[in-house]
Length: 84
Image (tube, rainbow, N blue to C red; front, side, top):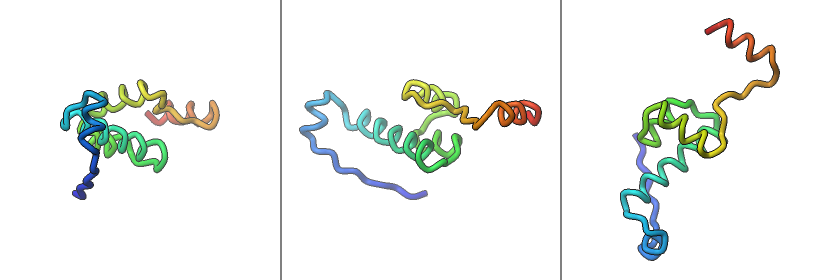
């Protein structure tokens, strides 16, 4: 697994009233949402990046205004339902 380090000034944490742990959590979640929405990485991998279960990550996506359902048209949705 690859690890990334992000330097956040202590003043930012102080101004935002964030602990280092909470700040790390936000960065992980933001990265996971980015990978999911912009790069098309799977929901499962992004949940791992965010250190969440799939259900928790789906709730995070919903809170961020991101739908996990991306169908071009009704036929594509119906096809997925038939294959489920």
